[in-house]
Image 1 (cartoon, one colour):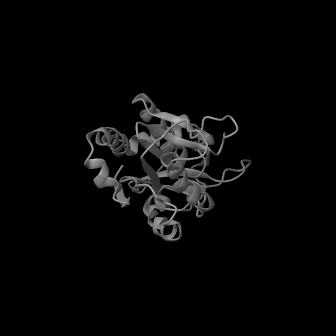
Image 2 (cartoon, rainbow, N blue to C red):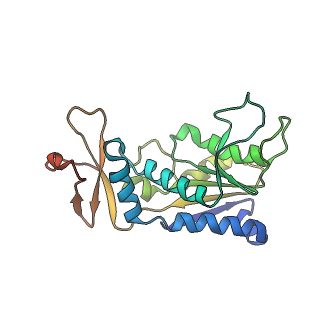
Length: 225
């Protein structure tokens, strides 16, 4: 995937100036950049099938998770040691001094996605499970939101500035904001299957509708973006 980046409090300069940070950062970037269009389509259709929903969010999250875990990143990391602090006091991924959140949630969760890496990186009155220094928050770009079939309430990479201004005094640690850009060769359109609640996504690759195996009976159903 193509990536777009934005630094808050000089995050990327700090990372590039520290070899220990730079190695883990490069590992994360390589994993994100090497998720291909075919990877996304195969996961969307073959692993998820009729459970895929409308957008690529489940597939992107799954591919990031399995590939980061293969490299030793910890998923669902607790911020605090106490068992009293469970969900939502967890980070999507951590390794070394990095906290990572993948923010495909509805808009009301965006401020929390930004604050969790700050909480993990600041000194706190509650004993920590982890202590990080840099936060990375991954968003879909507006183009990915459109082409990837995301819900209209999902906030994007471009929306970050709307949150940074009112939260400036609270986002006290370096944050790197990464936007995942649209697939190069396909887009998701939505269709309604009779008897199933909600809509499902269907891949249009190079303008041609790609029907998943086992769903040929739905080939004449009208699709919408």
